Image (cartoon, rainbow over all chains, first blue to last red):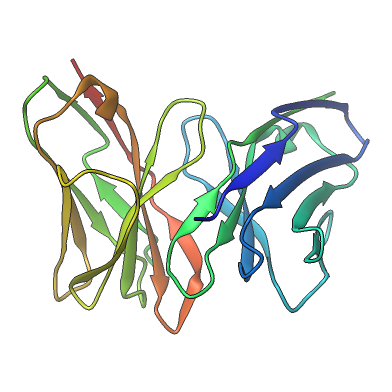
Amino acid sequence: GENVEQHPSTLSVQEGDSAVIKCTYSDSASNYFPWYKQELGKRPQLIIDIRSNVGEKKDQRIAVTLNKTAKHFSLHITETQPEDSAVYFCAAKEAGGFKTIFGAGTRLFVKA
Amino acid sequence: DAGVTQSPTHLIKTRGQQVTLRCSPKSGHDTVSWYQQALGQGPQFIFQYYEEEERQRGNFPDRFSGHQFPNYSSELNVNALLLGDSALYLCASSRDRATDTQYFGPGTRLTVL
């Protein structure tokens, strides 16, 4: 079955810097890759997603890139702000099925 | 437009007991997935319900079962609770014709003593 690995597990950046979180997946047929942000004690919130027919997607300060050949995808946050501090999860949806597999998460700290 | 709701918020049970958790999907959504999130980990897929049927299941024992009602709401039942079942249980809803995009509820924090 699908397996998703995420790194780093912890990331600390200065306010205004960029942050990059990387994920790899095992099933080359996976076709949908969402990213969720989870603040302490709250629900995961979808922040951006990308499908396998697209290589890059951007939404304001957030962008996601997908390299299908290498089976990895990354989240890029520019001009980080203290309110970006949270745990970020990448995920991959199995092709031909309904299961979404999540990475273990990256705890992002943005220092003011 | 109501988002995904779950009840109860918190629950404390003892080993061997049974528990039922409830989820109401986002308005317009007909598909419900359940996830278990242990502390410090990512959500793990338990199963997904559509048209009142379980249509895919993750690596969870039969002690975990579910149900979906005609109004698309869903229940997760866990029997013979173990200490290791302590976790945040999340429900996510989506529309079947666009099943990729899921929206999560606030979760139910289950503690097994």
